[in-house]
Every structure is written in C-alpha cells, then in structure tokens.
Image 1 (spheres, helix red, strand yellow):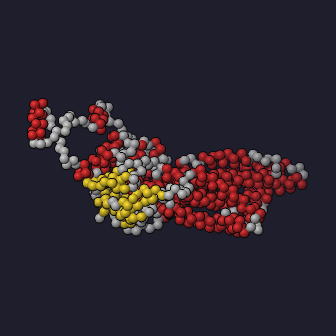
Image 2 (cartoon, each protein chain N blue to C red):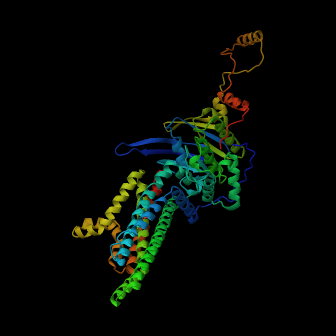
Image 3 (cartoon, rainbow over the protein chains, first blue to last red):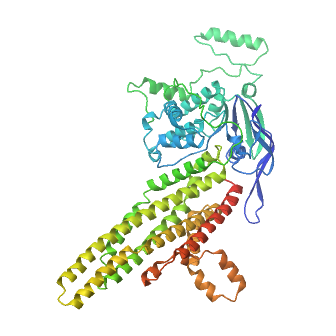
Length: 287
Length: 304
C-alpha cells in the first residue's frame, strides 16, 4: 500500500478578473511508499506547498486524483493517520505549550491520562518540558517549530507531512529535527519532507522528487541519483609525498585521470558543533 | 530535542479507523478554544469600561423624578450593553478566520480528521459563548447598580415619608416609595437583555458569513457595520419604499435589527409582551440558522 499516491494531479489557481489561471501543479504522479522518507524539493513557487495542500484536502484539485493510504484525499477519513507541520506556524499565541497539545489531542479523540502521558512524552522528546506552561507568544521560532512537530505527532500518525521543518531554526535545532526524522523513520513512519536545505534532505531521505514550475523534473532513489558512476574518491591519511606521486602515476598508467588531489574540508556544521561542544560552559538551551 | 531516549507510547486512544462522522464534541473543543483565545486577548477589559458607564449613569438625571431616573438609567445602560456587545460581536468575529489563516492554525486543525462544518460551527459557538458571558456580566453589573440606586432612592423616599408634615405630602412620598419598588421589580429589562443577546449572536453570524468570503479583517468589519446600520434602518426604509417591490424584497433579506431594541418601550413604560419577545427571538434564531448554513456551504468549497 502506498502512503501517498497521486495520478495526474493538477491544480490551476484563478488569478482574478480576466487574468486567466495559473498552473501551479501539472499532472503530478507521485508515489510515496509506506515507511519511507520522501523529499519533495524545488524552488519557491514550484508547487510543493500546493501538493501538500491537495493531499490534505485543503484546496480542491482541478484534475487528477490523490489518495492517502488508499482513501481519496477529499474524504475526512483520509486524514485519520496524517500529521502536518505547516511552514512558519504560529499557533494560538495565548495558549501554553501544554494547552496547545491538549487541544490537538482532544481534537483527535484523545483524553484523560493517556493524553497527558503522550503530551509529557512529546514535550520531552522535542525538548520543551521546561517551557510547557509558557504561552506560545513567548516562544522562539525554533520552539514554535518544535511544538509544531509535537502537535503533528500527537495522535501517533503513520504519515507525517513536514513543510520546511527547519526554516528559521538554528543549526543545533536543525540537527535535532533531522535526528527526529530519522527516528520517525526507524519507528516505521512515512515522512514527506519539503525543504530547501539540500544537505539535510540528502542525509535523511530515501527518495526525492524535484518540482519546477509545477512539473516533476527529476525523481528517484537518493543513493542512485547522487552517485557519480564515472568518478571515484579515495580518502587516505598520513600519506608521504613520494607515495602520493606513486599513486598518481599508477592511476595514469592504468588510463585514469587524476582530477583533483586536495585536503578534504570539514563542514561548517561540524566546525560549529565541535566549537560548541568544546565550550566549557556547555551548549545553549532552547527552552 | 533532549536526547531522544524518550520512549513514545503509541496513542492507543486516538481516533479509531473507519468513517469520521460529525462530532459535537469536536465542535465544542474548537468553540472552547475560540472562547479561551478571545478571553485571553483581554476582550473582557471592555466590560470594565461598561462598569464605569453603568456606575456613572446612576449619578445622571438626578433632577428628574425617581421613576424617570430609573427609566433613563435602564435605557442608557441597555444602550451601552448593545453598543459594547456589538463591538465584541463584530470586531471579535471579523478577526477569527483571518487570524486562523495568518497563524496557520486552520491548516493544522483541518489536517486532522476534523470536518469543515465542525470547525466553522466551533468558531461560531466560541464567539456566542463569549457574547453570552459578556452580556451576562454586563447584566449583573447593571443589576447591581440598579439595586444600589434603588436602595439610595428608597432611603430618600423613606425620609420623605418620615418627615412629611401633612397627610397629602405623606401620601405623595408613600406613592414615590411604591413606584420605586414597582419600577425596580419590573422584569422588562430582562426581556430587553435577552433580545440584545440574540441580536449580537445574529451580528456574529453575519460577520462570520462575510469573513468566509473575504480574508481582510478591515473589509469584514466595514461590511458588518454597514449591515448593522442598514438593519437598524430597515423598518423606516420599508415604510418609505412601500411601493417598490424590488426594494422591499431586498429589504426582506436584511434583519430588522430595530425590532430587537425594546429600550424605548421600557422608557415609555409600555408593557413588552413575552409573545413579542418570542416572535423577535424566533426570527433572529431562524436567521442565525439560515446564515450558518450559508456560511457552511461557502466555507466547504473555500480554498484555504
């Protein structure tokens, strides 16, 4: 069973009086398998959010069909097992973190001690236990994103739709959310992730699709797509200059080309995180 | 995410698989949330201003007779309940949907197994609850001020009785005393308050209908106030355009908001029969149901 399946899904938006219609999504055929992390990529205005809104039944399709776990998307029951984190959520500013999760939990038919237990676990998981009684008006961007993730997971859905979950979040928070997605994957959940952070998508996604101007222009398995079949990389340590010259000569003798020989650079993320780890005062807290 | 050694239990009590029917429970949860949110936005602060108006009204019109003073006070305070209530009903309702869209909360709610009808009804019920509590609190304040005023006037009238030097003067003072008691025991003010509450609920429904069409809060408020004024002018316009059938048909759509105001009758000492209250209330409630059905039909198709 596919978690998400669309057939020729098309959306045209009316632009206003005598301005015609904008083709936001053009015959999308998308299949997200149960249990995989799928990355939907694309520049701004490429149709990512439109796809999510169509899958959630928030907007009506112009043509084509879409199903979630084999239930047509325009039916309310298609959302029984779906959790959604929208882009830049603000939530109800006057509710506390705890009240926010209570509200969403009750909407999903949860109550009493099991709901309280679930809320406590989720607050702990997203690192907001200490901010549970604080109103959301005082939450930082990263904290709002975390409470957003918790509300999406409150009813233990099988499918999570995450729209830019790391937008505006600092590197530590961003890494936490990445870990969280990996953890969800290990729990057997299906995740559809829209993101601009390509590095992060590469780290967590099994498959990706690239949208541009409403059309899917590239799709496939992450490993296969990013592997450059013609090139090879060796990373060696403590090699003398003479030994290096020998290796290069051997490569040339075998008909290969040495394209570059350089010291690998660490990533800015590792550098940043290492610096924080080495700081004797400890890491920054989010709550 | 503090290290992920947290063991997540599966949410076993979450929604059972199968068909998702209409649920009044979810309507109530959304309604209660709407009420809490409005309350914490300090909407009730407006009631403090009402309290000042009510208290100060007790010191107005002291040059008139006891009976006239009470009538003016009731008239003035009922007017104030209506004005403050209208502000809460229109401004409060006009911001409901634009705020939901701005904060993205509508996406998170409708992404759960929640019907659009449950959402829109919940929003309305939350606002109706806010109006009910507001009107109730204003009525209690008004009742308290009336009681204090009555006590003060009874004291003055009693002094008049005690100090009357002639039987005629004594009779007149006793008449005053009886009139004060009769005026304050008059329950017509409760009828006036019931009708104001229904009028406010109708205004909230109209504003919600407007806000399903437009996303601009300013537009919603402006159109709702236009309907408010037109609704108050309806009976006069109906008389003026009695021979224009098209205009009359258009006017019939507008609620006759003037009919909900019984303060003038109270002021003139006219009796307000319960039958009249019942008819006006039934007209208002009927319109609320029709408007909510229209709101649902539009909202069900709306792109969010």
